[in-house]
Length: 491
Image (cartoon, rainbow, N blue to C red; front, side):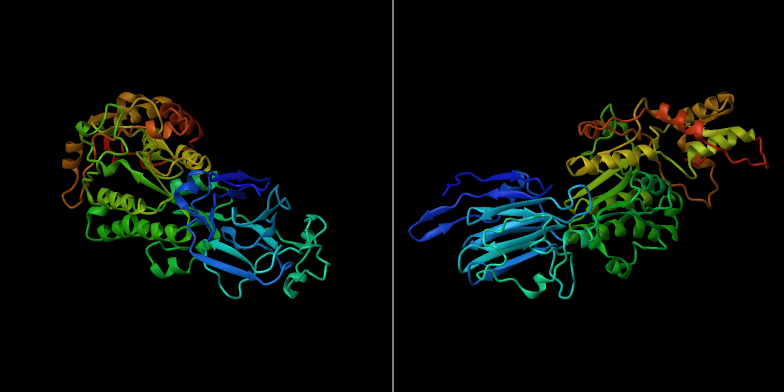
């Protein structure tokens, strides 16, 4: 017998199937081992899979054979007493469907079995106890894919032949299908909320197999709707739903809706993500900061800067950020000045330029544009590269500019005179608004520091380059009711 002196993890030909070799302390009384040690095992590469149930299978005699069963959850299998020959078959759709691996398991070996990999074993001694640590609760009556123990394609070399009188197999396992009759287990899905918004539409292009929902399909503020949703079918939530009417959030009608969508809904999704072991991506805003340049570095606001929201919209977004951090597997992408497929500042400037309208634009708010394809690309990067969970700032790169600077850039790109634009200050813009129309406070300094996401290997696109590309593809709407007076622009 090989004595294991150090905890180690061995990879196998089946992706995600990991063999754990565990040191066992032996003396005259028997032995002791740490069968599941989360901190040590996760550090060696095991997923932090969050087990919720432990099942034991007692096998009275040598030759008891079980499987090949494929459940939709992860499991950590080991032997409490005895020894088994264990075998696994990849039953997941994809290029490794049908891949196999087998080994013997006794007290110093355990195996992490990912969702969708068929599990089976044969007891090699009497009185064997086989243990399953799983991360979902067993539900009576649910059926899952299974494979015949004697399938010739996978050709598992059972040490005790299956036709031996010493082998005992359940009637149910005798009826399991062969591999060419098995429907592969589909991968867990991605859910995009707020799918009809600018960002949601872009995320749908970046994640083409995702399920897309808006408020009509799934109301994130409705506890009953959330409770009824089949969360076990998903692995990733991209929460692009948000209440973004910054000024309307200051009204009696808008305030509760902003809190419901921007704060309570992310809190509910965070609880769901924790319960179902999902990754939650949430999108935030520079408005969570007060915009005081003295509170930021020269390169902009950093992720660890204290939140200091000024208005109702900002406060609800800050509350949503805090709620999302309570679930272990989260990414918060904090961004600014979003431009995509829908109503936005760049489209407004393009229309005004086309229509001959000379706008008055705020010139003392400084930041960078963020195009939705940049946000979608960063989302894909973080969720597919095992980047550390947490909060990341994400905008397009380049020199920070004012809204008025960007307005002039739009006019110039479209062949119009940028001198048609008149600068104003945030204070003067707010003072010019009707007293009956509330104006939310805006942060003057919106530049976000991008060092943290860059350190993950992400390379951003310059905002000026992205703006030129966007304008080249833009088909401006024509407004025939032209007002040639200078027009203040709401940013």
